Image (cartoon, rainbow, N blue to C red; front, side):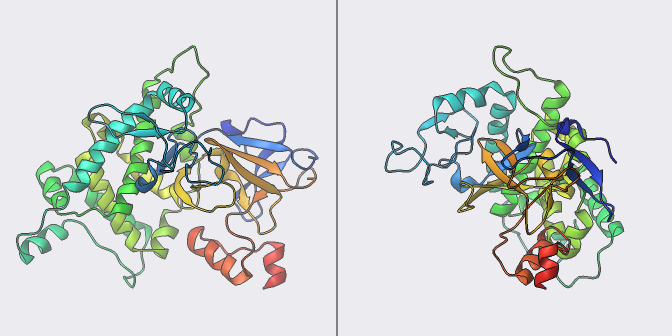
Length: 369
């Protein structure tokens, strides 16, 4: 049996090592249906897609175009309450109350500063090559990986990261590489998510305190995030091109982020190694109609998957709640579903293998296969 992580100081559940060597959460005692067993208070890192920034409340993630949105927001279907200041990106909110809560956290305004810097930085990566020789020379600064490349090992990945870290130590070379990088929009979204993680480390190290007149701001620690399972090798072996993207994003962040955040650049690889397989989509409601972004809720990542889940996951604002869907016996494993369980078994298994790197062996899959 393992010690419960600090985020699971609970009389209802405990973290155990499973028969296959993994970790999962189990009921300590019998539980009634609809028992709320855990609430993960806020993501350690997250991003709302740029296209949704005016439509998603920056604090509670409410979606203005949702069927559940208030009817008084107007025909534009965008939020009207905003925060802005010179040199920063604009944040939009569903209410003044959400804006006030958001402003209490020093991380919030700093991230808007960084967001504006990243947006300008992306534009600065669109310089054209002067010649094919220059293109070949600059692209050779970092290794490239794509489908069909030789089998990738952990040593291959380590050497690739050593290459980009070496590039980052030479400012002239880094500037030259990034000026023609032509960072893609999804790479920018990943960069924004990583910037939020870097900022969290910066804030946690300095132990900034919110307004003492208000409630404490929930924040997972860096050590808790590092305790999550790494999927770096499995992810890169499945999608070799993702390693090339990660190296490009790291170089971009090293070249673009403010100097005060650069001591925390090791955060980038550590988060990327854990993001796939541990992150949750930020959806419009529980029907998963529209994915608005994603985030890493550290304590929520300990729940394993089954195609017959006994837990229901719901989001209320920034909080992920987990409740039982039926009576649970003491000692029973507590699981959610990572995917649409209405799909056929072959599709379910394929999706889990591609995104979570395991073949589902739950009783339902065994019966249906």
